[in-house]
Length: 355
Image 1: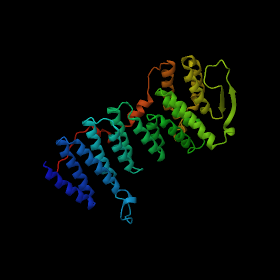
Image 2: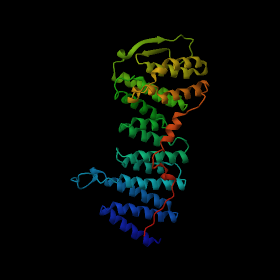
Image 3: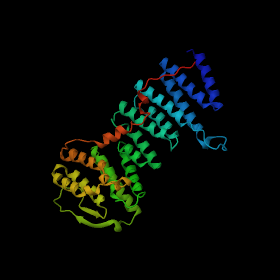
Image 4: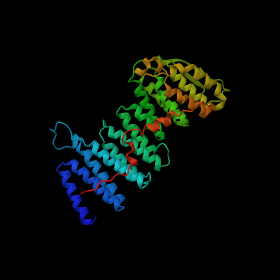
């Protein structure tokens, strides 16, 4: 297509946007993008899609609409997500590396999506899939994971947030710990330690021992800052000077799973010599690792399989305890990031032509 022809299409595209004919604009973004791709002008294609996505998402932002009397914002999340899939398809097909510039494009798009939009969640999953393929981390770029985790934490999407936090940066452990404490206050009549156990076990299953300790310390600090610690404490124990651990005393809580989590971290710190102790706490606290939601009312669902599978991973990682049928629940969780109906779009090679 000639330069003059491209400029003509761009003029029509601008007119469609100005007239709020977003359906026509969406089609033209696709068609013009495909022409850039055929010319191997991938930067122009990406720039066009980036601009088009933000334009469509901006159309659904009530705060930026001139006519505040419209009953509802003009929701363009679906069309914007469609263009986002095309953008990530180009990233994938042309093997775009995980650079700061490319991540900034994706982060800006992510932040424009509506908080309550499923498209936002699906877009985050596709970004992690791309970054896991062309970056240094098989579970996705840590910075992207951290940003997405914080965003979903702020939106109250705790299960989704933890999937990103666990693969994030060192800073993610702090945010993760604070989120888990906040999450624990949203649920009544549940062992406070259930939530910190979720985070610690996930980190240990990934050999992230430092992050596990950091998360636990942040969680305890949140308790100290927000609650009467004396009411939650049973007693304090002092260790013999011959015991080879960094701490010389231990606070025991009324919460069984807070104690379980601390005992677990101490076992991991000492290594295989503590294998008998690990087995003992696993048996002692197995009954405490139960679901906190409505499924716990079902007799057959009382055991939290996710946490117990994580314990099996920890046993194998640090104490050489083999399980007959190895299960990696975090791998299942990571795979679930790409299980949405739209997630295969990054693999597709569909094209659109303008008549």
